[in-house]
Length: 567
Image (cartoon, rainbow, N blue to C red; front, side, top):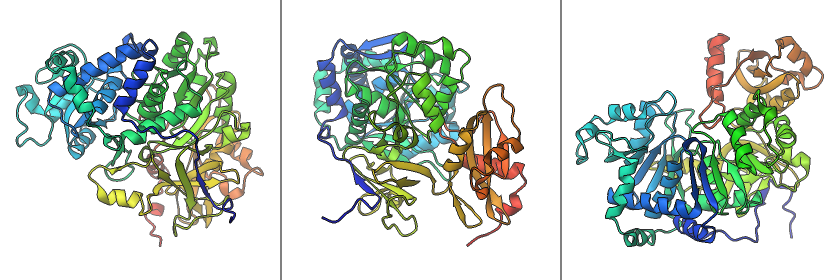
């Protein structure tokens, strides 16, 4: 046989088959297997459900939605922070074959209107408010006809027919959550069973809008098969059982929360724990201690906030065993602290994207320590990955950086009502082009070295921001660092580092540059250094480097350099 190990291609073998069920059927099976197991703890609401209790509540919600006239294939939007009703709605829509549209809790009116219109949401579930956003007032501004009560859609600018507002309080033109559940009395259980039996596991079940750095967000459309299996295998690789208890501080509207968290637990009969509506490091630490959690999820910035919390040392986190750090590149030094100080000896890194449901790489608990802290692991079961030359599309030898491409059950059905964007992302052979630059070693371990659009080309040298970030993390005063390229008339681009120092530390630009000299190549030393307290980021914790670049160009007065045209 020819030796194929020299090429950057791997396929994930497994003796565990893919799950050939819908989410609703899988949930019913697990609830029947572990009826007394605690399924959900929503600490901020004081709510606890066993699997049997959660199933009863999900079925009530599903019958209530049937009473509202929700048809198969209709889009049901949810605009809410982390609450028990989020999970209940997620599972209820899966039983009905309605497509759940996840709406970012941070959206403002323009973004909300676009998502509702583009996906064609007919029924919308909203929280009354979240932080500084008054969701109720925003919906009235967008859909003033709601105040007149339910009626025909007619010529309205949005297809919105019904709005369900969480809570018991009556709201003109909207249904309360209590009214939705009460509506279940008008629909017999047999009607729900009949609808549930119509579902197929390849049906679309979820639309998630990806953060757009340019243009409008695109709605990644995912099936039962996509997300149920991905959640299952993430948890399986973490060695989950029905005794595990997972704290989920990441937002549910994102794959990290609703797939890796909710469905990962659900497929194993484990417990989901929501510590707060939005991320609060103190609430996370309290939840871990008081719920005796065995696992914790988070993006790197969340783990940094927990480790640096003034009260961190007083919490007993010894119940923790595992967890996942994902969502953005994971600093090696942070991983080491999570392992040692938070007792998460089996913490794993996951890599993926919304369009791949999301995970395609994951570290394993029994992998060598250096691989567990410095790579995104090995390919997921039943998934193929290759690394190609971004320009030619040709497969690259191992060790060479190129674009990471993914193929398999996890690749989305496409972007909702956007065939052009779908064709640009998924090629004729079924490969999803991620836009991420990666390298693969001889054992199939992968490192993410940046985004194709983030790569810095300085005087003809390709510079990968991740490499410089990892080096600067080793400075004893540095808490977090992000590296970007900014325009330069001589070199094309120059390197800039945004640095966040540890509490109480002071550092100068020259001190950091001196730290770099003779330890990294001269062309990798940042020309510009900016000390910051925070970074512009999405609600999921993804750093928005395009905003950093835009702000830096203005502050450094580099507009003329940015205007220089290149071939």
